[in-house]
Image (cartoon, rainbow, N blue to C red):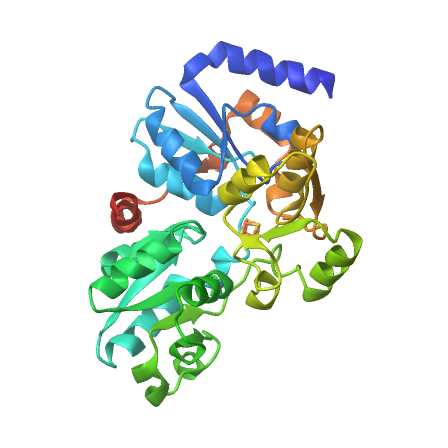
Amino acid sequence: MKEIVQEINDIRRQWGKKLLILGHHYQRPSVLCHADELGDSLELSRKAASHSEAERIVFCGVKFMAESADILTNRNQTVYMPDISAGCPMANMADADEMTESWKMLESHGGEWLPVVYVNSSAEIKACCGKWGGSTCTSSNASKVFKWVFAQGKKVFFLPDEHLGINTAYDMGIPDNEVLLYDPGKQNGGIRTEELARAKVIVWKGFCLVHVAFKPEHVIEARKKFPDAKIIVHPETPREVVRMCDAHGSTSQIIKYVEAAAAGSTIIVGTELNLVDRLAAEQKCRVTVKALSSSVCANMAKTNANNLLALLKEWPARNEVHVPESVAVDARKSLTTMLNL
Ligand code: SF4
């Protein structure tokens, strides 16, 4: 392992600022120790765009993140992934054909909808969103983007994470009977015409395997064991669990919550285990951080120090991430709309 670290460090030194390594918060420590920048998916894409001197950008995360970096960076910058097969099952739960079909159905019923697409989605889904006048959102600004839609007298068609959609609608005080679930496996998404008229938000049936693993019994158990602890979870967690906790927030908001906790307190965190373990290690002299339950993203875990080193040595073309300009142009619109909000 020592040799691998040494070899990676040597290569980074040779490349200097022409090489930028980005590490998502859910990566393991043996990868993150090589990252020039650490962050959530959108933060990292913004950082990639701000490092215009970097010719090669290595994204240690999953595919949709590397695609966003490619969309937001210049033509003379190339984005790579150590393991190109590291996808996101949630992003794959919505494809462009299905989204087009659902959009036609909504348009045929009055056209009062705007798509809001979570950044955890494919470039093609973001492109559909941009083409139809919508915006992307993150887990920290979803309610802001929903408000932007409502201010135009429109309704929200949210993809691809039902839980972030439902939690956002709930936080905004939207009654349950105005929030519908669109199931792409059913005729018309399983939505009846009369339901559409009263709906304000439609959420796509999709979920993150890591965050739906948190169950009410985990919260009950944690309360029993640590009665004075605060519990925070990510908003991709199902609503019944979110409502039992003290707080919910995006990855960055969870980090801030832990950093702001009073010395001597205990914080139980419901998100990907690598981040929880890192927070626990960083805060160990001040705050006790525990996992609500051990939940790991298998796709994030595909990146490791070995395939990072292999990439840095060989730069194989198969590890490059290229979003065709025909897709990128509309995907960029949906990202830019959010960044300008
Ligand atoms: S944690 Fe969830 S949303 Fe993030 S990459 Fe893994 S499966 Fe996708």
